[in-house]
Length: 473
Image (cartoon, rainbow, N blue to C red; front, side, top):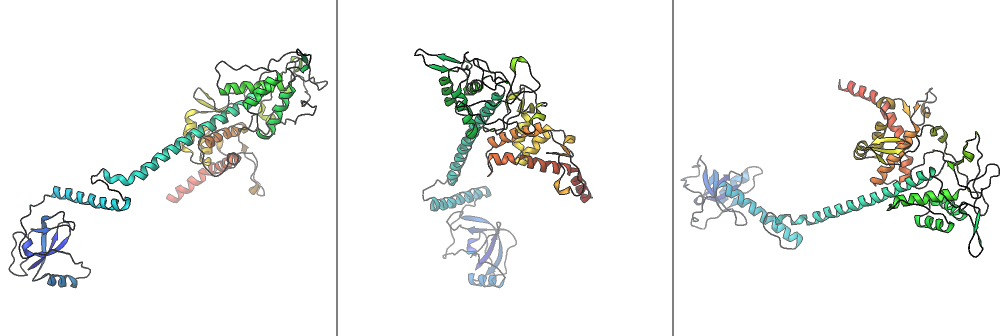
């Protein structure tokens, strides 16, 4: 006689009644109502023992039980245990805790077999060795960490170069004249007449020729030109690369522009150059397109009208004219004198440009929270202006071209100095976080467009909030 049993874990099996402990039915209808101990053995020979089960059906043979099961829809034929004429020996009953341990060990062995086929190398059978397939992932994490470290070092180097360039450009506009030798010419031991140090035609030609295409010459080239011209510069003791670069550039500018007499337009021999530099903000980047024109201060008195005299090259040809940026005259009155370099930290504040400061904490938070250029610009704008100051404002102060026919009026313009200072903050984000398909110049040019979009969204914030409240109600 055979029996169909169902275990506690919903597994089923067909077996002779001799494989059920303390169970000897007399007919097929003698189905016990209590839980019995039925035999079970795994497919790999593990988990062999007697487990709690319920007798579901009895039959004279296993074919009879299979026929009964086939009459029921979607009934899978369970596992069949055969008895070769004699009852198996007594197998100790496995406690539930040991059953879980055996199942876990069997699962690890099966996983070990999968890994052997996949990796082609033997693996351990313990729980620690089952993570050998993560070797590739660990190597990937190591490569990612190394890549991040290299990117961080690269961004730091680029940021340092950018800061040095900006500091040099700003120093060139407020540089003090160097103390060169007096006299228009001097004679050496062989009697050859040399040009005076005050004129330095070779330095003047090299400086202004290298400014036009790609910015300023390298430090070694400028230092060599100073030696050839006979000019000397003084850098602080044990000065770093930044102080040395600023000293060389300052000496170049002072030696390249001698005193020019307003009446004749010619350089005065043996004179010291004396400048009053226009405080026009320089654009961020190593290549300034517009530089403020230096004006003279002859005799210590400032005349009402100063002539615009262009300095001459060594061959007599005039240098390219230096133009004043549009709107710079209106902004000169607002720019405070003696501003620190861009991105310089002063008492927990970061100087952006033209005396505009932002707290170091707010700058770090903006870099962290501004996932895109638009969001970063919004964070910086909220830091430079109060919430009520951003209402009904525009970037250029012009009426909307789309609504001009409807009688649109111009909104109040944002402070130009603060808008220019935002370019420095955005440049810092671009140099720190290298992301996006656009170049640095393209992203800086799009800053005002993104700022204009932010102002439009900010002006409509109340309308959108009212619409959301109406929708909820």
